[in-house]
Every structure is written in C-alpha cells, then in structure tokens.
Amino acid sequence: MRGGHGEGVSRVRFFVVLMQWQSPVRFSLFLLRGRLFFMESTVSCTGSALPGLDVEVGSDLPPSAGLGSSAAYCTSLAAALLAATHNISRNPSNGRWQQEDLELIDKWAFRAETLIHGNPSGIDNTVSTFGGALSYQSGHISELKSMPTLRVLLTNTNVPRSTSTLVSAVKDNVNKFPDIYKPILDSMGAIAVESKRVMEALASGTLPEVSVACNTLESKDDLFCVLETLIDVNQQLLMALGVGHPCLEQLCRVTRKHGLHSKLTGAGGGGCGFTVVPPGVGANVVEAVRADLVRCGFVCWETDLGGPGVCIPRTEQSLVQEK
Image 1 (cartoon, helix red, strand yellow):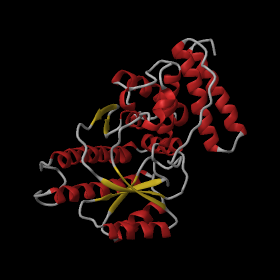
Image 2 (tube, helix red, strand yellow):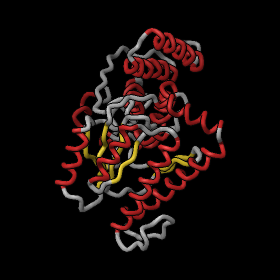
Image 3 (cartoon, one colour):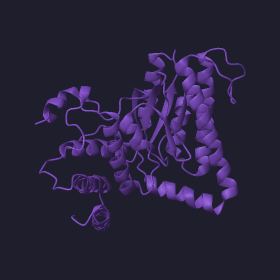
Image 4 (cartoon, rainbow, N blue to C red):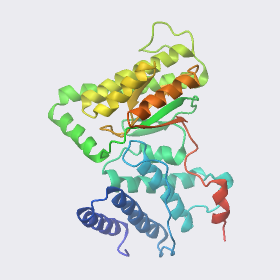
C-alpha cells in the first residue's frame, strides 16, 4: 500500500467488500476489517513497512450487543500497533499514555470504526480511549469531570443485531416523517442533558433544580428517583423510534417487578440493556433479579460505570519495554 493513505483505505474497503460477499461469518469479517485497516494505517503513519508480528485478540465483551465491543477492539489494536511502530510510547508511565498519545490512538480507532459502522458518532472509541464518562451533543464530545459510583446490571439478551442497519432505518424514518421523529430525538436529547445534570449532582452531593423530578429534591434518593424516571421515558422513546425488541421489553418487565429500572443500550433491536442499582438495594434483590433474567435465557453481569480507558495492564508491561 505505497500509494498513500487514501489509496490504501480504498484498497482495504474493496477487499473487505469481497470478503463480506464470500464469508457468512460476521464476527470474522469484523476482526478482518479492523486488522486490515490498522495494518494500512500504521504503515501510513510511519512511512515504513510494518514489522512482522502476531496479533492475538481476547475479549469478554460479546459482539453486536450494544456494549461498544468494536470500539474497545479498535482502540486496543490501535494502541498496540501504534506502539509497535514507535508512534507512541511502548512503555507509558503506570500503563497509561499521555494526552497526546491518547489523542492519536483515538483518531485511528475512530477511522477503524467508520469501516465497521459506516458513520459512527465517535463517542464509543473516545470513551474506550480516555475512560470515564462522556457527553455527546450535536457532534461535540465533552468529559464529565466527576463521575458518581453507580452500580448497574448489564444484561445480554443474546439477540444479535446490526448497528449500521438499525441506524440506517432510523435515518430513513426521520427523513420520511420529520415532524414525527425529530420531536422524539429532541426529547431524547433533553433527557440526556438532564441525566448529565443528575449524574454531576450525584457526584458532587448537591441537589440542583431539575426539570423532571419526583416533587421536591431532598436527598440522593430523590436524585435516583429522577434518574429512574428519565430511564423509563427514554426507553419508551427508543421503542417509538423503532429500535425496541420483545426481549428488551421482557428485560424491563422483569427488573420492574423488583423495583428496578432498565433501558436498552447501544443501537437496540436486541443486544444488551442496563439496569440501575441504587444505593441501599440489597444483594438478595440483585441476586433475585439476576436469577429471573437468567431464567429468561439472558446473561447478566454486575458492574460499575466509568473506567480508566485504554492502558497496558501491569502484567503485560514487561512485554513492551523499550528496546
């Protein structure tokens, strides 16, 4: 691929199209897209041949489930290959790269996401790179400076779906019926803004005025009440937008029976949903919810929101020491 970056990407796209026509295995295609892209991109970055290497990928995230697995994959591979070609440090302090290196990783991870999803927002690869929590509005991504400790249940319905197909269908409906669908999107945007304020309030311990509230805010419990209301409304709007699925409705019914609130995550149409677990909810309740979800044929994990972003685990740092 010596004809320059643009020509190289065109060749990668052409080859991927051929492989997509020949291979029925979507996940293999997904891996192929990322690997081909990064081989081309790292060569473009360095202006020299990519050194011979073996790439081994392991992940606990299910693909096509709304958990950003493609972004996590692209970000990790970007970091590994950029380090292999000495475009970023191969031995960052405490396993975390500096801001300049992270921005380069994020750039290439986003370019790979465009091959996988067509027209991604960029928020998945950015949060995979920098960690924490991000706000996305009108193409602008900003960081939430403080993040509250927030327990969630992640539930995989095991129903596969295509992000690009779902996004394309929504766009078609918006173009056909703008007076109907644009207000839905505007309402979802208002929910996102309000949720950001609630999250910041939970992190700071303050009780701000909010436009959607359970009467008067007097404690953090009231803030969680607001958050749960926003989750419920958002889920209903997503269903109106056409990205719901019977299995996701079942997930919401099961958790609601135990007093918890859930919504889909990612593009919808199956995949995963998340359930907020407020402080004070006992382990017995969480276990009962998980047991009911498993009986539905789902897979469920308990986790916390927010994380460190792309890094080199301590056990792996010795493998990437500067030569």
